[in-house]
Image 1 (cartoon, one colour):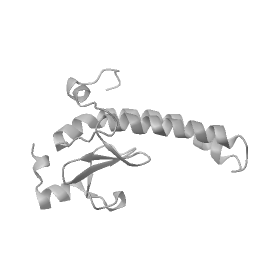
Image 2: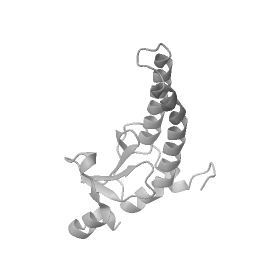
Image 3: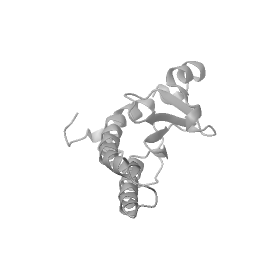
Image 4: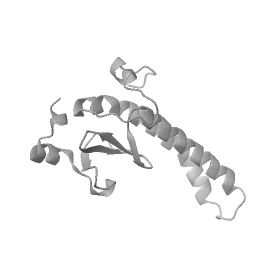
Length: 142
């Protein structure tokens, strides 16, 4: 889906930054291609900056404009992700709020495959299939 048009369901889910939304697993799967496209674009834009920054000493005066551009790209990505109703957990780490926790995704994962409860950190995410099998959450069957 490399076109600039998105399914009507996805466009309808775009909201104001910071506005939370509870997803069903089906809705999260519909939004994932848009999230992947946004994130892939930002990551590709950031890669050359990271290369330039790593080749310079921290005290090099050329670092500051690179840092500012880096921050600008990341802030734009965060805003775009939040407008989809998603929670940013870290750089390229995103959560779909399910009402009891988050279905988690990290670039460049190909699918939604992990879950974590609200009180857990992103690093403690569990396989989604295991959570669905053990807990049978309502959001998995909507």
